[in-house]
Length: 183
Image (tube, rainbow, N blue to C red; front, side, top):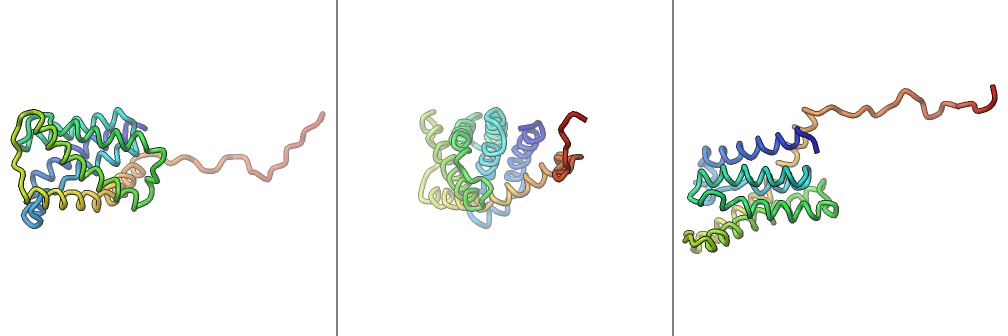
C-alpha cells in the first residue's frame, strides 16, 4: 500500500460524509439515508493495509457522528469491525469481481447499522426504532451493495491516474542468444 491509497481513502471518507449531509434528495425520495461509508470501508479493507482501514473508520466515524444524533465515536467500532473482518479474509475474496464487491458492500452496509444500534443500546442511549427502521435498513443495505462496485471502479481509476505504471518491457530481448565460452 502506498500513501496515495491512504490519502485517497481518507479524503473520500470526509467527502462521503459531507455529501450525505449536503444532498438530501436520496433521503427524501427513498425515505432513508444512503450511507457510503461501509462501501468505502470495503474498498479500504481490500486495497489497503489495516492501519488505513483503522484511519478511515476513525475519521469517517467521527465525521459521521459529528453530523448525526449519535454520540461521538459510536460509529467507529462498527465500521472498523466490518473492515477488519473483510481484511482478515481478503486473500480468499475475489475482489476484482463485481458480484463479490456487491455482496461485500451489502454485508457491510447491513452490518454497520445493526452494530451501531447495538453500541448505542449498550451505551444507554435510546435510538428511535420501529417498523420504519426496517425499511431504512433494507434501503441502506441494498443501496450500499449496489454502489460498492462503482466505488471500486472510480477509486481504482483514480489510483491508476495518479500513480506511475511499471515498465512492462526490458532492454533485453528474450530471443537474444548469449554465447558462453572462453572467447
